[in-house]
Length: 296
Image (cartoon, rainbow, N blue to C red):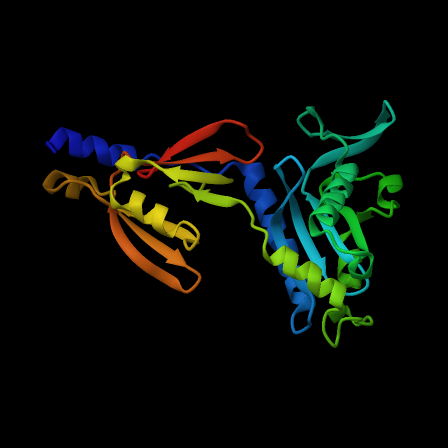
């Protein structure tokens, strides 16, 4: 590779994809909520899952932000970290949640409360438990941003919880723990079903931006990584790309990329990667497949 091409390759690799503000805030809010729940059930038999995707009849998967099993009911949590003001209007016999942003923009989020109830129904259908193994599920929405003005009429709904409501429900808050001797048989059966479900894949771009979605394949021009991915697809939990983005070193030698492959126990394989190779994915909420080059 001649000098100009080497410098151009490093320039491509140094392109940064900066995090998007509201996505970062939402992700941090989700992490904060799950940390609080984890602390509230630590040392007990309760279980928590985040970001599970439940398959429905037509093959699509619906994501649930957080599921907590333990106690009398199963918590089905939909978290919204909005700012501004919100209201609920009725249109055609259905509820619509409207967010009024500080910028003056108005966003129609649809039937947020109905959506988490629908996801609960989908989980019950997927679990397919008999009447003996049936468990009571409690779907609700939590608005986690203090900068969002929520009407009192919405706060009073049974399917609208606050962080304090969740804390009061968890066993380490001092309440009675029906699962102190272990999960009931129906709850254990549901936990086994949830353990078999997966969540989104996460793509970490150089610069800090993250994209969630489904990774389908790796291009053949990625080098040895393509065959390793096919061979170990179910085993791989993370692929880490190492790049030396030094312009000075590019004057001397060809820029290279290295891939580290991880499973549940740690790194199990290392190989070189062609920078122009890519992975093929579909972002969450999109029907269009896209590519992301390894250099990015």
